[in-house]
Amino acid sequence: MRHSVSVTCCALLVSSFSLAYAADVPGGTVLAEKQELVRHIKDEPASLDPAKAVGLPEIQVIRDLFEGLVNQNEKGEIIPGVASQWKSNDNRIWTFTLRDNAQWADGTPVTAQDFVYSWQRLVDPKTLSPFAWFAALAGITNAQAIIDGKATPDQLGVSAVDAHTLRIQLDKPLPWFASLTANFAFYPVQKANVESGKDWMKPGKLIGNGAYVLKERVVNEKLVVVPNTHYWDNAKTVLQKVTFLPINQESAATKRYLAGDIDITESFPKNMYQKLLKDIPGQVYTPPQLGTYYYAFNTQKGPTADSRVRLALSMTIDRRLMAEKVLGTGEKPAWHFTPDVTAGFTPDPSPFEQMSQEELNAQAKTLLRAAGYGSQKPLKLTLLYNTSENHQKIAIAVASMWKKNLGVDVKLQNQEWKTYIDSRNTGNFDVIRASWVGDYNEPSTFLSLLTSTHTGNISRFTNPTYDKILTQATMENTAEARNADYNAAEKILTEQAPIAPIYQYTNGRLIKPWVKGYPITNPEDVAYSRTMYIVKH
Image (tube, rainbow, N blue to C red; front, side):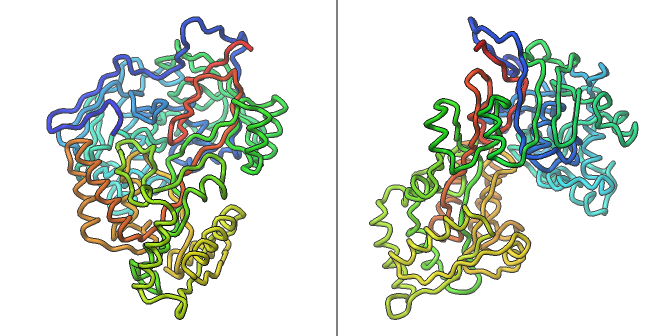
């Protein structure tokens, strides 16, 4: 992975020296006298409890109110948070050393026991956390058993060696475990605060350990946070007030941005992209996101059970045209399932990428003829997508490509979300629209989806060699060896085509020119207000 933690057979150790990530104001910068920022979020936060959060609106606010063991920098690399250093000899037993000046907003110290309590609470069935599964995904010993009610929370593989030393035991080695601890689900909460009553998340009562505290909240109108004077790095916090405005209509948020009411939007209407570029140049951003839009083929039944058919269909999708013309808002063609911005992934060139679309179409025709389809016996299939103007636009374009170049008769079928999910889960499709945004910044969050037993394996793809490669990746001692494994896995996906990656996601947003320090290149869009500041304008 591209961060300062390098896993070797020996002890792994990273220190906080020179790695703190707060507002980095270049020398000579003239700051605005008023350091107040207004951020748009897409909806009213459902909860400010890290264990109850599930949507981006609350997560954006929670990242200001709480802090985990590690943070992310502008590149998505992990850096010290509450933990000043961490180590592991075998990638299975991990030890995190907490900085001795980490405090809660009430001035009491943040301890290893706070993390033990919080993580046990996360997996406790009584908590009903929508993100409890993340602890199981991370492989923490007994996490799944506790979630299933087969073990008690105190049996979770996490313990406090002393006030500043946290020990975590995993079921099996996981080289990138430290990066998972950046997830909001692993943020600590103060036991006394949580157990003080049902109003513990209200302004004036919520006690977090992040750079900001909640000062005001008006439901469906605004949330206001101000600096936490007890935060260990408060001296580097520049913004003195951050207001989050929940607005669920992109057009409405954009209108308020243009009126000067908002400094950063969470998104903007795609159909306004070209106009915005013209009207407010330098304020429109479409950085790459850790996500891939793809089509999944049914590998178990129907015509797409034949890998030659799948490969022909995949090759005939003109990814360049899709990204540049059909979409046209900064998206990149997806030549691999794993996005280019993923940490720890240096992709080998795809054979598709090195060929012209004409060459791809010619090879696809040969493959389809070999599978028994042609003008006398045209391939017929159904392309399923959930109801959406964007999904429909893409489906129409792809169906046209298949018809023009392969003579395929495509029936387009759209379903409402619940029906679509049922069709997907029961395998009732030929080709189905899908997408994946990484749960963490490491290739396995994508590639593991296609392993034989993964519940996210929509295409029902089964390949023992592929499974073996993904298992091997978890046991590698170097990033280079893991990258080789991931490229080997991608090669199988290209050749067997259980899916057809189409384009890599982007994060569209608007940012005022006087706002600096926004981590626009972070592939997971992790943005802490403490890294931002406003220059004189």
